[in-house]
Image: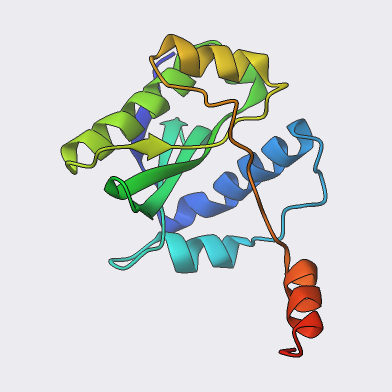
Length: 162
């Protein structure tokens, strides 16, 4: 597939959000997306953006994205977190995911950073196999931990802080 890989621009963010919503449906969380196009523009464009989004574009259509941001590891220093690698369903298996993934690896390597990390659902065996085949270490002994705003409020309330 002949797609151009480039950094996303503000006018791409409506299509980026469409892909994020497609992923949420695929991951069985169709109502979980709260981010807006305005959020994506505000936090993902400009000189001080919170994230970098690479897009695979063909004839004005965004076929896939890879969204990354910096993290800090107490062991490695500054690292890159790959939040999402998404390819529209009808374009999967055509090399777009590999092209985006390669761009993320190149980006991280050229920055001189020592690690890229991300989370993959254990039931998404095609993604797990894709990452393992590239040499990535899928660490099954680690669990992802999250706390949503309701849990934060409850915790702080119990501590008398909210």
